Image (cartoon, rainbow, N blue to C red; front, side, top):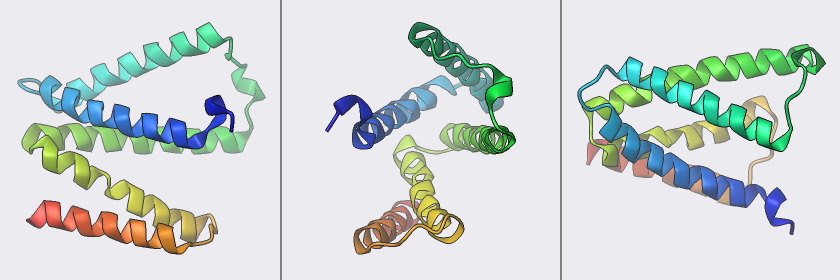
Length: 143
């Protein structure tokens, strides 16, 4: 297995950095408007991503992308922005130990969307894992 191409390695990196996002976000929204905090975060993400694209020489002409790529990337960007706005407001109002796990209900929702809209085939581990995520979120939210 090529480590640089392993989806699992990148998924674990995503989880690690998402955990840091929750911690740093909670500390960062203290005393400022959560929408402004999201804006600042977005600028930083833009700059970091541009630097990575530049260092790796991966810039491409926007016209080379298909209409579907543009459409779904724009929709994904809108969904991400709305998610971040909600997330930062939730972090401002609640404890990170509850907000971050509840936010991860997105995993269970993504499983449902993948099965229903993308025609992915369910497996017992995926169904059990998704159910446990929902159960854990309920325990955290109402426990």
